[in-house]
Amino acid sequence: MRLEIFPVEGLPEITRGDDLAGMICDAVELVENDVVMVTQKIVSKAEGAMVDIDPSNPLSHKPIVERESVRILRRRGELIISQTKHGFVCANAGIDLSNVERGTAALLPDDSDRSARRIRDAIRGRYNVNVGVIISDTFGRPWRRGVTDVAIGCAGVKAILDLRGTPDALGRTMQVTEVALVDELASAAELAMGKTTGIPVAVIRGGPTEWFGESSVQNDLVRDAADDLFR
Image 1: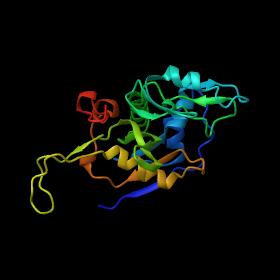
Image 2: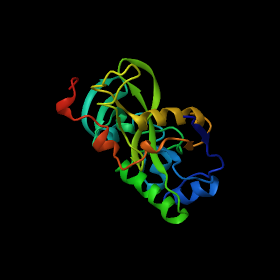
Image 3: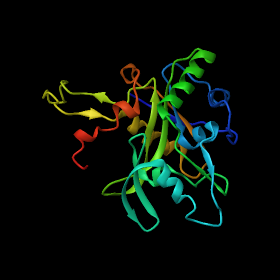
Image 4: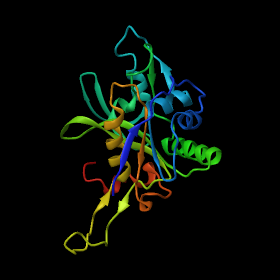
């Protein structure tokens, strides 16, 4: 298998009410079974998931973090690690102050899976091409330095590739292997988009047909509390 990952350049600044599907298709010609990676920031902007904060107070977004959290896990200085209503564990409930106008903060989309479905359905309905859509965001990871992009919503592409019951390279039957496909794709696409280039969309081309199908990050990727050894 050979994959091609390329950034979608030329998108304008996104504002509330913008047609993301139309803008993406105006910027790139999509083909069947492309995977379209869309960053959370522009989805939040298009959906109006933005709030005003006091630009003179670096802690003015903290009450919003508390409001957007269902559980606070850790505090250290100005940093809060919390669980959001989506089930995500992340810094400051995913509230982002980067790449937005001073005095505003971006919230996570209310339902990123639904947001991905809207973009996927609009592309399919208007342009007659079936694609997968992944919404990505940047998260840190416990016990490891650095950040990486992960999926917070998907449509038309499987969140998990379940390899349990299939043979490995030596013929042994795999018992527990479930690959977080959408997270791996999000991380790979971020290398093409970059953190400082202002490019919020990338396309992954060449994926096999077994990648595609209906799925959900919240339902299929977020681990249930009963199965989580760290809660």
